[in-house]
Image (cartoon, rainbow, N blue to C red; front, side):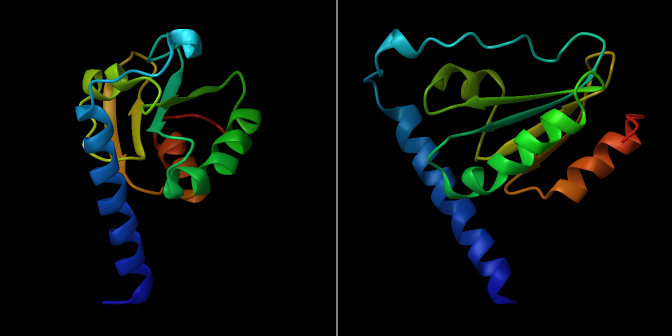
Length: 135
């Protein structure tokens, strides 16, 4: 097995352990960060939900990709990020076992796929194409 695989596996395991620890703690951060979470999936649009945390390493690696895709697919697909360290209930709601997790929904709101771990731009674009979203 190659070094990249082991590194990605280690990051996934670390992210999962941290997620479990965060979800199991009873203390909640101030509710001042009660950001409004948009409806998921977005009605009438193919939706990619990215569940992660702003301080998780693979999530940080994905952040610029997510921002790029939001601009490129504006009006054609919905791309939503939820920080599950700030919104713990969302991790439970979506059945998250590790972060980052990407969940894809078709235009009718049906979940059509999930991916756990870092996902590169080309792979996300490929899923959008399969779901009929033009680039």
